[in-house]
Structure formats: structure tokens, C-alpha cells
Length: 196
Image (tube, rainbow, N blue to C red; front, side, top):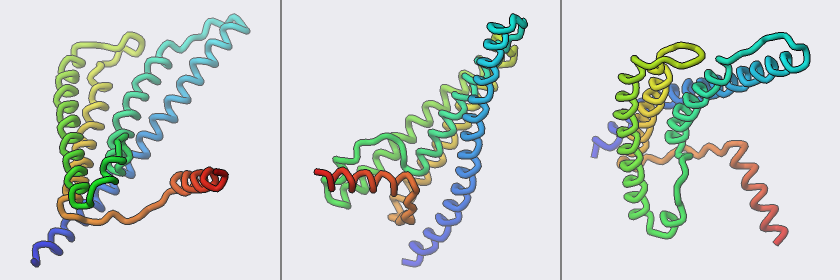
């Protein structure tokens, strides 16, 4: 019986570490999105400058780096979404079954997500190997850098999914954190129900 509380304390330490890692990853994904907006803006400005002034200014690298930043933000953001249990899923079935069965279904969901993430890690490592021999057209950088963003995001997704699976196995309750988005969604739901 003493293993339970000790394992919970160890898990809470792991969860605090994962919270910190995911906070950094979330900021990185946001910075990648911001960088994508800036580089696309530079590209549009360069085209406008050429169109209206005739000054031969172009930024062929902008669209390419924006595409690579989008790849990074998708994989890193997806890993953060996995940690916060925000990936797309069909929760209606889980809500219809008893809690004990629902817990095992959630665990199965984590195991399947982990299997997919591990497959993506394996494939991204293969792509990194190929990317060392392949160069991007405009920026002339090794494509391995882009593929490493995929690998980093999928590795983080593995760690996050494993953390969630252990949380489900230990039956650790998640602290209720209602974000502003969730509160807004609840207000909309209540107003729609009130209108009906």
C-alpha cells in the first residue's frame, strides 16, 4: 500500500518536469507561427514593392522558410496538444460506458497514440538520414534540419503520451484547469441552450 503514494510522488515530479518541457515547447511552437507570419509578410511586401515600384527585390527564401516553420509548429504543437489531451478524439463512446471501462479505453487510446508517434519517430529518423544528402532549393540548407523538427515533435509526443498513459494507470486525477477558451465555449453553449 505504501507503493501507491511513493509512486504518485515520483510521478508528480515527472509531471512537473513535463509541464516545464511542454511550456517551453508551446512557446517554441508559438514563435514558429510568429516567424511564419513575419516571413510571409516579407514575401508579400517584396512582391508589392516590385509590382508598384519596379525595384527588383525578391525573397524566394521566405515562402520556403515559412513552410518549414509550419512543419515545426505542427509537430511541436501536436506534441503539446497530446500532453493536454487536446488531440481529436471521439469522447461520446467513453462517456457512455462505466468509468472503469472508460479508463481502460483511454489507456488503449494512449497506447495507440504512442504507437503512431513511435512510427513517426522511426520514419523521421529515416528522413533525416536522407535529408543529409538533400538541400532545400532556395535556402540551400540540408533538409535534415526540417526533418529534425518532425523527430523532435514526435519524440515529445511519445514522452507526453507515455506520461498520460502512466497517469491513467496510476489513476491520478488531473487538476481542473479551465482555460479562457473553455469558459467561453461553456458560455456559448449555455446561451445556445437558453435560446432553445
